[in-house]
Amino acid sequence: MKTVIWRVFLVIGLVFLAYPFSFAREDDTEKINKKIELKGEKALTVEMDFGGGIIDLEKNDTGDILDAEIEYDPDKVEIDVDYRKIGGKGKLYLESEFENGHLDFDTDYNYWHLGFTDRVPIDFEIDIGACEAEFDFTGLRISNLNLDLGASSTEITFRKPNPERISIINIDVGASELKIEGLGNANFDRLSFDGGVGDFTLDFGGELKHKAYVDIDVGLGSLTILLPENIGVRIHEEGSFLSSFSIDTDGFDEVESKVYESQNFGKTEGALIFDIEIGLGSVEIEYIDPSL
Image (cartoon, rainbow, N blue to C red; front, side, top):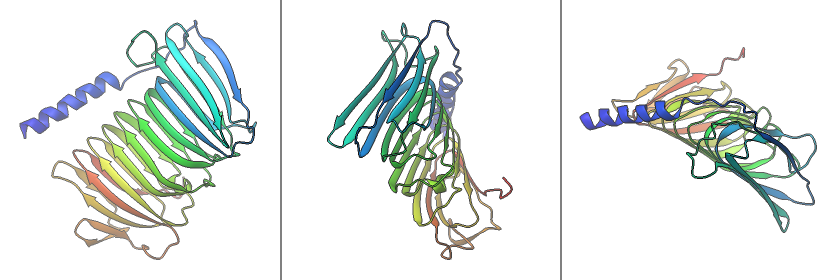
């Protein structure tokens, strides 16, 4: 028991060292615009690797593969924008890191505004560290999504149904704050979420039209799951005496030990099947407020 307690305090201490960060604009920055035109590509892969900074991502209005504005300190931060076309598929690599062996936290000003095309399917592989990020995937054709989020503060939105079917969404979160809205619009078959230390919100609102599976693993973090009332839901939960699990018993029936079903499960076009494992953290299940 003492070993578990010491591990908890050790992780919490590391979070306080790494998590509180801010991004200040510096005068010695360079501004560049980068455009990559669409020239017959049928699909696109985007790999993003950022040690830190501020990132805004959304659909552009030009139809170009990429329409980006970047502002950074070239004396301290090294950036890379590399694009290659192989056959009918494009591959875009975006990177930002400190030069000269500095710690991998872009605490100097490092801002990326990224606009992507909505004309071809996109596979996103996103790995970010100490970042403040807003990813608005509304209107984009997302065919694959892998997110590795370090000590970041990230907001993700799907305001409209994704035209592409995603076989699996992988989300691996460290000491972070994460909020995702409109996951019912993401059009996924399976979602895998692994949360470490932090505060996480997964909002499954949207227009889910099929059965989808969600695997949740929460360590020391606090996760809130928001569900629409028009979707049938089944939840299997496994925790320990050190974990916390909360569910609205007025909207769910415990059909087996630690297995819950909404009263409309099996009666709706869309359905969510959850498998939730909790370590030392907490998970709370709530219905989305229809007035919002």
